[in-house]
Image 1 (cartoon, rainbow, N blue to C red):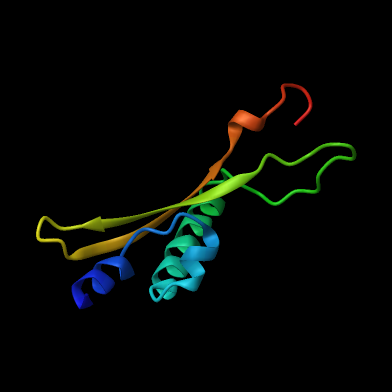
Image 2: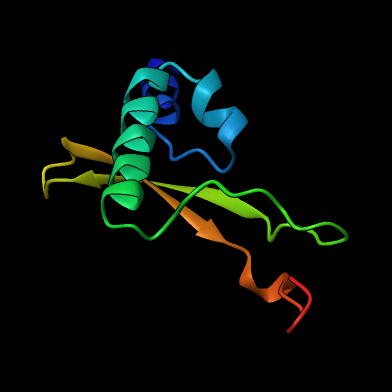
Length: 92
């Protein structure tokens, strides 16, 4: 039972809420900060005012844990991805 709880503690979160609500939240927060810094540094993302009568394309955080072959954790990875399938040409 203790081993099961230990393994469950290191599962990859499916949502932002799970990432910030788990015991490894400081690792996920750091991974999200690194991703946002990278997006800004590479000029692939900026915060803009949304034009009137338009909707923003939603985005989602995707989380992964990179592990060594022995199962030890190398790093926590967070990626911000756009839900491009919701895009309407000429509208969004």
